[in-house]
Length: 146
Image (cartoon, rainbow, N blue to C red):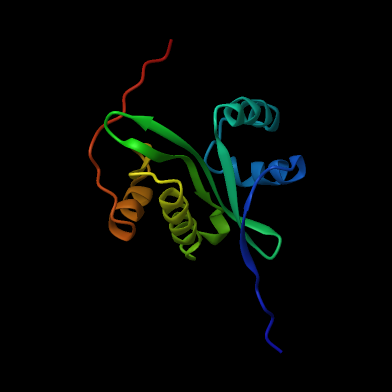
């Protein structure tokens, strides 16, 4: 008999799910420890940040941290702060499935765009955004440590 694999998308709201999601998030945000992750999440959540997980059975395969923003150049848009697929599940379609969910979510929220930033070193991610998802690379992002 063939085993049925259940996939579903959830919004992370329970602390136990947030703690489980840290194991995946730290693959992208390697400088975080659990305490800083939980502390920053609390602040970010108050500023509109939401964290979504794509589950296969009960295991988190991908995470996306997003917020809806408005500015002059992107109008009302969904900003993807974090997008990560577990290393053991990369190239299995989970990132693509997550982004399709976010495209629909953004449309439902009447957003004009989905925007994100990606580190210069993340060449494979850039190829994914441009080749698989048809994102346009249209600017550089700058910052200065204070």
